[in-house]
Image 1: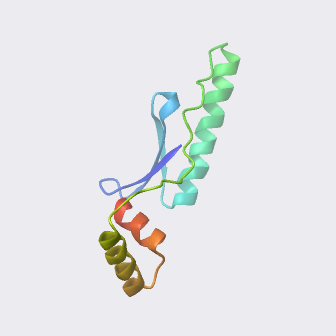
Image 2: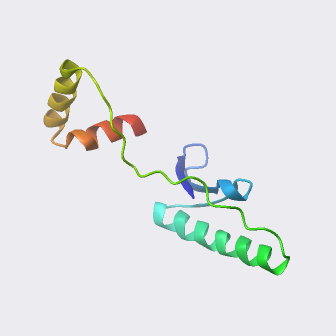
Length: 98
C-alpha cells in the first residue's frame, strides 16, 4: 500500500501496486488507509471466489538506510537540524520527502 498526498485532487491517495495499481482515497491519511484496506479485502475476496491468483507481496523495505558522507556535510546537516529543533534523522527524512 502506497500513501501519497495528491495536490491535484486535494486528498490522500492510496495505491495497491500488486493489484494493477488499484487506487482509493481519503481526506485524511487514516481514512485513505482504511479505504485501502477495504479495497484490498474486496480484491482478495474476489480473487478467491473466482479462483484467481493472489499477487505475491512485493519486497518490503526495512526503513533503515546507511549513508557515508563527508564529515563536513554531516556537521552542516546536524547544525541545520539543531536550528530547527528536530533530530538529524527527522530533518533528513522531511527534506527527502519534500
